[in-house]
Length: 310
Ligand code: NAD
Ligand code: MLT
Image (tube, rainbow, N blue to C red; front, side, top):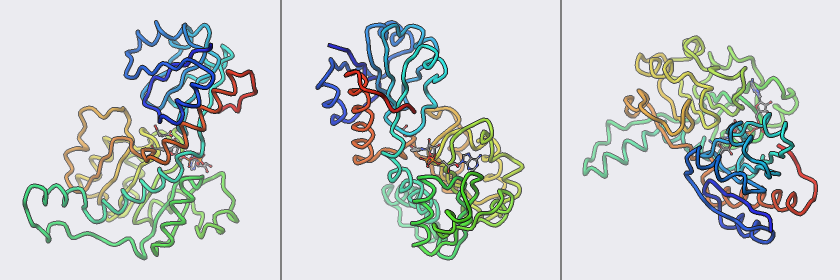
């Protein structure tokens, strides 16, 4: 029987599918050396974002046929090294779209209404209403950077809340943007006009530190930024300075330059910053979607059927 190593927490629904065709070993939080030692015994590896599948892991993976990432990005897999060894890399491009979009919207509203800090204060037995006066999103301008699957859903819901949407996405047509009720603009105009900016782009060499000191300086002092896309699209040091100095009003961040987040000056910014630990895809529904989607692809490859590659 083939063997599958599941090295990050995966919903049971996915494990049940794998168990139809393979021996499934769940071993999470493995140090790199242990993963390198274990991997030669496995035909498939299933991960989320915790496991880093480096070239060292892939070199040791003498029997591995497939790596399945239960999520959208495959940033934590050395895809080039896997391809060189003939190992297929698969993912779930749509399973957590709604979860990530809803998290971005929740972050925008939490930041606007100071919900995390107000909650902390009530739980500490205070009753301070004035301190937590917020701002409305109604009639405000939302700048959506990346009008793909998640960005489109965010734009659609935000329109229903009465927001006006500007979008920047060089790969989307004016017609598609118009269908979504968005006006396509260049990035500078979006930075200058938006009250809220939400990022829904991949991390690539072009998007790394797209939000840097120069970009932040173009924004309104009342602007608020949401990043539920990928860490490293925002220069965190520049963001800290911009919020601290009042260059912009605040930020809501789910993803970080380095994860888990270590020492970070972002923690010092009080109610101007809302931080969550990479929870964009963390809903019961999304975790079932991605687990089933990726487990089915692994099962098919182990049965000798063709794969859909990431
Ligand atoms: P998608 O591929 O459907 O959309 C991405 C969009 O970005 C595309 O329309 C593309 O044209 C556009 N784009 C690419 N490069 C760009 C650039 N330089 N400038 C502007 N636009 C650019 O992807 P998606 O499913 O919507 O995911 C968006 C991001 O969210 C990805 O980075 C994904 O990894 C991340 N994500 C995070 C979580 C989380 O847990 N926080 C969950 C799911 C997805
Ligand atoms: C993804 O790429 O799907 C997300 O970042 C979610 C996750 O890491 O689980």
